[in-house]
Length: 614
Image (tube, rainbow, N blue to C red; front, side, top):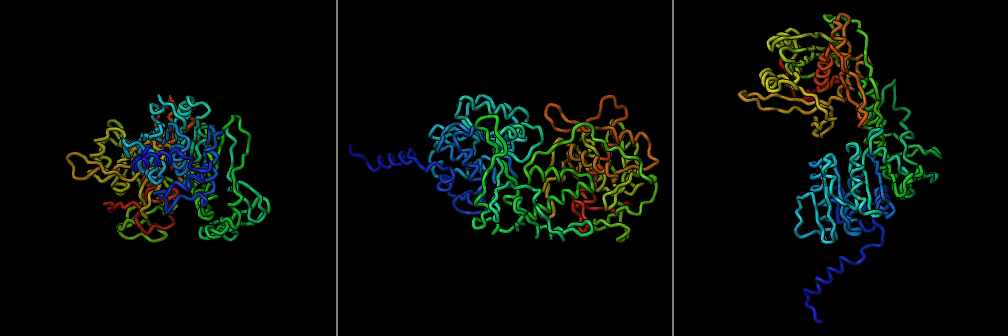
């Protein structure tokens, strides 16, 4: 039968698709077929030799005997790339319906459209299989070989229903609501022994569903081989060694820590200096690296993989991060940096303390009307100073005024702050009117930039009144943290948000709204009180003391997550506690307390203008 050139081209194309395309090694296949990782700073064909933990992990999760794989890894170490490369490999080499799960639907769409599809486009074999009707903006992709790939949010339980899948991949699985990982895994039962669930995450919290699943695997640790003795050992933070001369009179020299931190072999005790040469194949630190199981799994096919920041990050920089986190906790009781370091950099689960979190402190030895020589001041140029530096004319004292809005009246706290993070109560009481708040602000010399009003109740009224006065509207949130822009332009996570400007009908000026995390701020305040940085005077009313000690910290028995509650039967309310929280948010934004505090302030970190008290 004579065939035309067009027919031959079609036949050859079909044969190319059906022909065996690699030796059986998924890493070999990926490096030959993925021309580029579009979002990578390293241009050119995919190469996993620079990230051997990813190469090894890819081989393990592609193994037909792997039915459950948990990947517990530090941030910025390749988890996202691993799941994208795996998805490309399965589409071509092990066809079957697949689900990629992100925290919620908007994040799922962003991940699929901006990261997954662009990588597929750099893989000709995947691109050739895409259906002609495929929409590159859709979160569902159909392929000519019968594969369908869905990308959805795991928080929406409806996304986990009515699908039969060969593979489920969940990213940041520690954020999944309790029971949703099990619900996702139930989608693969129709494929029997072919089904596979892959859960990836940074460190979660003790008792969450992902952490429990990982602990039931063989818990393989990414381990390196010492260049001196060839002993294979897991990367452990306890073998990080800081320079002996980096600490002087109890103060760390961060530059010396960054330059001189080493890693000690647990076998021969050789101190390894951190440099590109130490990590390359010639020095064998990566050549002998591998995953080593630390326990026997109770379930066949359940594999757990763990690696931390030490395998791919600069040890000195990580040392500085750790020391700053410890410093914030020691000085201010701020546990947030420690949690972030442990979860994100060491990829370890965080254990929240359960039960009541007691932070009751006795009255400090000062009176509410006493003059405080250590009080900070704000200069006319919006810089912080105090008496030890010099106080220019027309400066105003650094005092916050926090207003808890009630129906028909307000509870108000005025608090003075020092540049060291200590604070003193100047006033707490009930005010009946907005004009009364104006009088109180003027009497205590509080800058308009440091007045915050709760906008959770009677919101529109608060927006209007604060916009006219250039005060801040504050609202507590269940969100853990927020992304804010700082002076160098790089977004960072904080427990408060950037200012949002809200239009108020009939007014030229907009209301400025700041959100703050309920849990993180309350934990922070409790730590400050426990360290006696945030106290109250000896002549304060017992009503204030009872309100300040009104809430307790407990764990939700269903989710295992902590939160603060006002116990039933409390007749005093929590107005002093709420005011203290809002005042803390205002102070932290200026850098006088917490992990953002600085020894000297040479610019206004928030861009807030400041008027003199009068």
